[in-house]
Length: 130
Image (cartoon, rainbow, N blue to C red; front, side, top):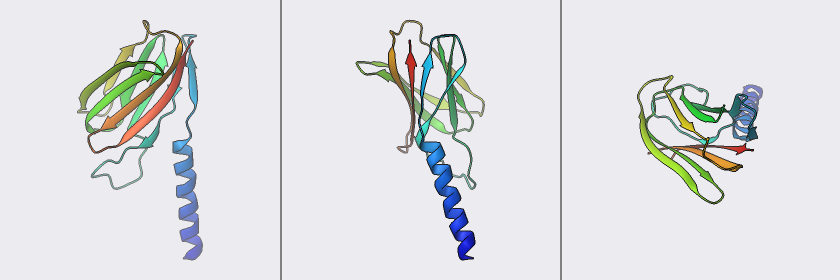
């Protein structure tokens, strides 16, 4: 029993480290680049370990945020070191819902994507526009 508990704890540690490791994604070549999201986004009513409720990527000057689960009201924000580009409240009503934002008018630099819910949960990702 002790060995099993140690294995479970070690597995949870590995999962939490892999979820919280963030990478900087560089965009500019027209390639699909997934944005590595990390944070704490509790979901009420969930009984099993699931993947993150969102995925995000940048392709051809467009930031896309994909909802994997119905999570209700959220706010999607994008900011740079010097400005808030946008902060948009919305409601996620179905899995697979996609929200897209044009990045064409943004200058080169590092940008922070943040997805927040009303319970204080958040996911963050960083990417660069060259």
